[in-house]
Length: 190
Image 1 (cartoon, rainbow, N blue to C red):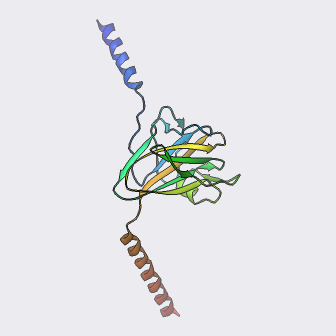
Image 2 (cartoon, rainbow, N blue to C red):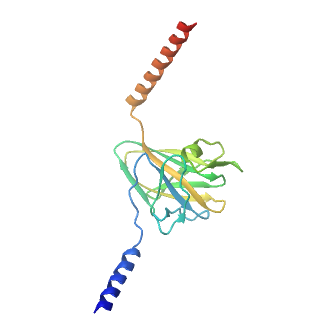
């Protein structure tokens, strides 16, 4: 009887471990890392979050998370900026889809550019393929397909809320006040 019980428990454990990876909801504002292989082959998440994805090297700078299996979904009552960037070595370009409809392609890349593993640095590095897309409010289901691939790798995206107009105005007013105060302080020291 003990052997049957142990065998049944082992079978249940294997069944639980063999469950397929389901797409999940992503957090707005967080950098998310995905893996890809050849041009034309849909991107996947990163192993172990997506057992079908490749192993990814995480960012040593800006915090990021490994994505699970696509599609990657999120919802927002406001507009969304979707930032997508290649990482590590240049040589890749991506087409981004929302509910299966293309929303665009990342920029062309320059050869022999390396931005490291930090998505914020890579997004700002000239020669790395990247793009920022403006999405409307509501539900989104993102998939990514590399259109050019230099042998596969990993890349990042971030979905973040579009700032409120009042926030931008407040930031601008604060910056203007800072400049006035700095100018005033310089005049007083001269």
